[in-house]
Length: 381
Ligand code: SF4
Image 1 (spheres, rainbow, N blue to C red):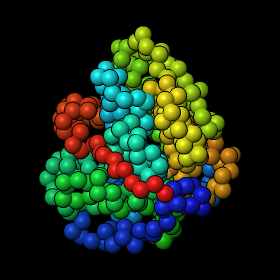
Image 2 (cartoon, rainbow, N blue to C red):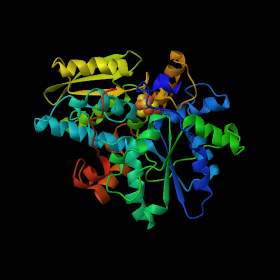
Image 3 (spheres, rainbow, N blue to C red):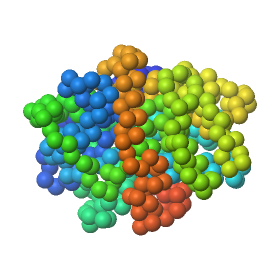
Image 4 (cartoon, helix red, strand yellow):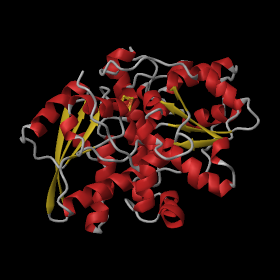
């Protein structure tokens, strides 16, 4: 299964549950967990619930029962990614930077382009993926707030993804820092196993909320977990930032669904933005070859390695490519988006506070140091 969803073939499943138990049992460690958007619509399948059932509140309750000191939401950092990536796009357009900008949240896709398209390393966004952004903030901003030594913090990410385990070990993601941004990555399946090992009756748990402030998020961030969601979230913010007007209809239906290539032309402030979404590395290769040949006129492209995006990730309960399961999980994320009072990343009050109190400007100096990364040309395989 892992190889089927991680087409670079570089990934094998690495079990890290024991490392998590060890950290939780270490009285000298402050153990913080974060959960990716796609986990909340698939974890329930490990306990007999239907695909797409939203179990956010039960998941948070289970993580507290397991003993984590704080339970944060990677969705917060997805909102932050939008702030950084949208600003990067505008910066490239205004300063004649190279286009299209390619999204960079997916480490399997990043590894693929490093090996297969080393001549295009200057077009992916330099944004770290959301869980890496949250990891570095926990060890800087949040450690400072609590007044504790970052070396005593263990950050655990619960991801739908086996490639994130490799990503957390990339030296480019913790350059110059004393500790890695993220210490341990476990998958949705591994979390389900931990909950069973602790004899927690998942379906009896009462819903709980994420901790603040790094648990606050908007509807834009939760749709990161499905194909098209990153771009839709980015357009919701880019439209309002560039026009100064309110975007009344936030849904970009044309970017949704399971087609391998989805395209949109979005008029914003007198300019037509040409956007595309691809998922699956075969589709990514096709579009990159067009860029290489100078045949692409897109401004921005979202690329995810797994068919369906992270809802279909290699760390999720097995779905065997079943489109009904993937569509149910995607619909769960869209339901969660609709249920949120705020649905645009730039409206997240905790994000506004983070820039005001700590980071300064989006895409500014400190944001660059903490939230952006670089890529490496690797041998063609
Ligand atoms: Fe991981 Fe999501 Fe990329 Fe799949 S699409 S490899 S789950 S980040």
